[in-house]
Image (tube, rainbow, N blue to C red; front, top):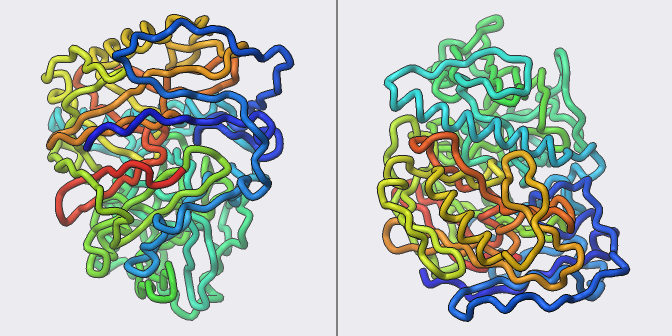
Length: 497
C-alpha cells in the first residue's frame, strides 16, 4: 500500500469546550483546552525538504453543531446491504452512552492500558517457556502476571439487540477477548452503572441456560482459563480481567440481533449477575477474538470470519464495525502469523518503520524475535526497545524546533505547543509482511494531555522478546480488516474521519 499523503488534522478549541474534547480518540477526557489569548504562530524552523510531515492545526473555525456527533460517510456504511454494519462510538464522547459517567483520568487510562499490555505479553512469555497460563485472583490494580484474561481496557462501543423482543444494549468490542457477555437481572451481588436498562432474561422468550453437561460449558475453560462451575446443574462462568475488573454469572444462549436480516438464534453468551470494573457506561463486551466461543467463530457460517472496523479520530465523530463485508476494494493484506501463546490473538509481522518518510535502521531480527499483535482494546503502541529507541531518536530530531515538556508515565518524548499554531509533526509509517505500508494518521501520532504536554503516543516494551502491541490510537481512520478464514489482516486508508 502506498503511503498516504500528509494530512491536515484540526483541533478546535471551541468545539472542545462544547463537545467534551476534540482530540485524538483516546485522550484524557478530563483535560480541557482553554483558548490561549497569547496564542500566536511563531516562525518554526523549516524542516528538511526530503522529510514528510503532518500539519496539526491547533485552532480552527467553529464547526456546526451537527459535527458534535457526525456519522461515517455513506460509502463507508454501504455494508448495510451486504453484511451487518454497526456504528462505532467513543464511550465517553457525545455519541456514546457513557458521557454522563465519571470519565477516567489520564493516569487511569495509562494504568489500565499498561495492565492490558503486560497481560498480553505474559501469555506469550509463558507459552514460549512451555508453561500453562493460569488465573490468579487479585484485588489490586497491578496486573496479575498469570492472568488468563486480558485487561478490560477499550473505549469503543457498538449497539446490538439481545433477547426476544430484542433489548438494545451498548457493548465494548474487543479483538483481544472471546466471550460476549452483558449485565443481567437480578444482580446477585453487584452491577455497575449503565445508561441502558439492565437485561432481564426472564423477560425474554428465547433465553436458555446451558447445562453443566453441555460441551459448550466445558469450552469455557479456553476462554476464561477457569473450569466451568455449576449451580443446580446450570453452567456458570467467571472471568477476572487483569485490571481487577470481573464478570460472573450464568452461561446461556439467546437471540442476538444486529439488523433485521442479521439475527442469530442460540448465541452463547455470559449473563453477568456480578460485575465490576472499567466497563461502566457500557452494558458489557462483544468478544471478537479467535476462540470457538467468540462472536467471530459463532457467526462464521454467515460472515466467514470476516469483519472490519474503522475507529474515529475524535470524540465527536463515529466509525463503523462491519461483518461479512469490507467497505472498500483498496485493502492491502498481510498474513496472520502463528506465534506460541497467540492463537486467540491477531498476530502479524512488522518489517520496518519509517519516520518522516525515511526508513529507520532497525535490524530485521528485532521484529522477528518479538512478533506483533493488532489489538482494538489497547490504546498505545508498544515496540521492542531497539525499535522504539530508533523511532524516538528520529522523531525528536525532526521535532527539535519545539520546546520539550516533562515526561510522564510510559511517555518519555513530550512537547509544549502552548504558543505554536500550527505544528508540523513527522509522519510515522509501519511496513508489514507482503509489502503493506500503513501511515499513521496525524491524530494517532501524539497523545495530548494538554497543549503544554503532547507526547509521542508510543512506548518501549520491557524486553526484546516481548510481543509488540499495535494500539487503537495508531489505528484511527484506517479500515482494519480481519479475515480469519483467509488467514490475513488488511488495511485501507480513509475509512472514517
